[in-house]
Length: 210
Image (cartoon, rainbow, N blue to C red; front, side):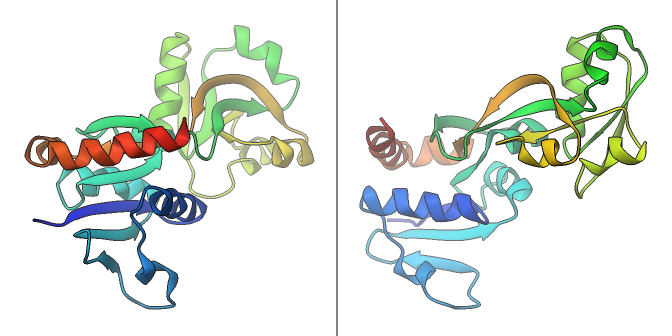
């Protein structure tokens, strides 16, 4: 039996995912140890796990370096990789939103040529294209909340969980437009070759989250 390999987005989501895996009988004790190892193995079940930057998880899955990935819907939307999205794990719930200074709420309805800062340029552009609004997208990697405060952008497009960071900086949600949570993604070739094993795992996860 070949190994099934899982790519997990680093951080809190990986911890939540491993807790879920333990509940369905797929523990990986190696991951609990302090180590510099990059790949963790459950030899009994022929499973391998590795941690990756979230934005790289769909790439590993599309190219078959991982059979299965666990990553946020925001990353799936932004990366637009050729893979199967199989299950909403309902972990890390939040939403994508347009945010900015309160006075921008009314201006958004009439303004054109809006300058938008975001870590998610593809998602931002797709949203404003649907609104038939002309925008200039500025890609940022750090705290996007800074952009409208210092005048770099009119608004931002970002993930919002509680909105407390926005509020603390005099900003607010202007438009919510996409609910987000962690999803299970699967390589297309793996789904054909290991369909039964993969679907058994997904079905067990589905039973737990329901």
